[in-house]
Length: 149
Image 1 (cartoon, one colour):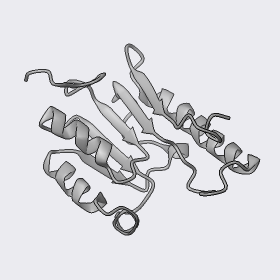
Image 2: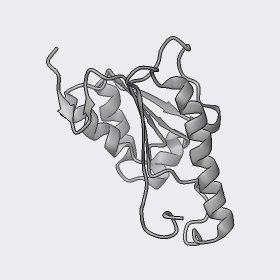
Image 3: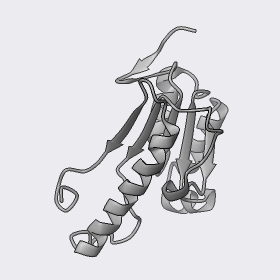
Image 4: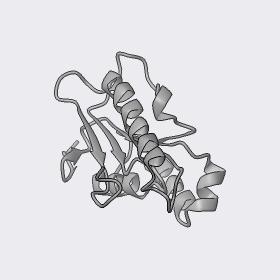
């Protein structure tokens, strides 16, 4: 199999995507690779919640599934467990972590603390699931206030 890359990710890496919204990022990787058999895409939301909240969510999930992606709903970063300990991921990605609370009120200290706790919980569990050698954990976050706090 020929190596296909999208930035720092490749089809040779086992990749876990955490906290997907409409699954568009997972789908962009799958399309770039021509397959999604190396991807596990997760969301805290149920499929029904995704259908209600994201116009393209269901279609993106259906295409990911056709491309061989493992899609997991109800995946909580505070208790994340998917595979036996011997199966680790090359890359674990959490794009724009958000506690799901405080939309429009995110500058309040309590919401900032909730977001920080979310990231702490993710990192605590992700380090147990990433490969010891050459494994990486990636978090993408907003840089504008209040996310910069």
